[in-house]
Length: 354
Ligand SMILES: Cc1ncc(COP(=O)(O)O)c(C=O)c1O
Image (cartoon, rainbow, N blue to C red; front, side, top):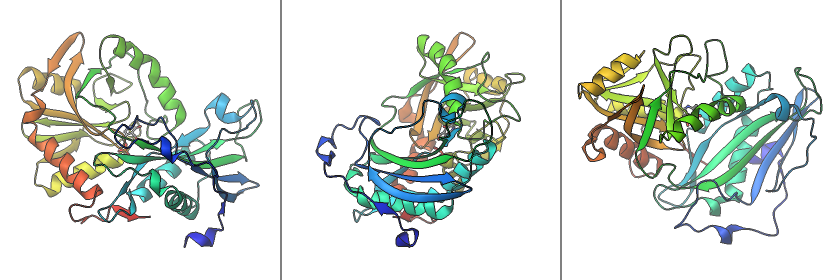
């Protein structure tokens, strides 16, 4: 029960909902009226509350700012056919947040704080969940170290917060990606499997260089040899080679995407030959050269299923078949969207009613 947690609720007196134009949603530009927060101090989580979304005051010596002691999650809330708010697989995000937290010595958030805080926030701001197909309310839970201390050490002061923002499509066109063979995102034993803030900061510069060359995203390769395909900036990757759906197997250098897992489940369920295994850059490049790659796409919460139009490798751009010919990714994307928006049976139990 939501009430069990005794969340204090301070409602806004100045709703900004009139600023939301459902026909013209800019990705993550506008934040909904309220936010959730809880504090960790003295070894326990306390003071769960919902308050009007606003700028915060914090010490300039906060550990999160200086040492990146911060982890986050991302998921989407939708309206079902009856107009009720629903979330897609939120418990998977909850477990992943805590796996990330453990790696950074951030205290794990109890399930009731995560789930009840989020449910209550979404009930309060349900008008902010857009109802046009393909739009949603992006939900961003995060935990950061709020302690005022210059020096890196395991802290006892944290905040867990949830903010939300209406979103439409992340990519409006198929994406052009480059296989990165100089910089790395994650090395074995590192924090690649965690949704740690610093992972994303470290990706900015290599991504900027690729963007200067006309690409939108990178395909990361392994840190040791740049021989194996890993993932893209904020998406896992899937290839269709010789009719098989293939994705890199999970390791500690990859984020275990919830969309990845959902698409793999649907792919198997729909009878496509599906493989999770190591994929070499050579295999991808040979398949591209020999015309054996029918499809390549990124999968993630923000981008959902994003077709890849071009893969660049060492100065050569390989163009993939036109999106109109991509039956496998199109049918997987449609089935996923239909489940999320309640048009087909949710036989895997992925939809959580808020
Ligand atoms: C690095 C990275 N890989 C993959 C994903 C896709 O994960 P999910 O499908 O859970 O959104 C994300 C986005 O969360 C990401 O940041």
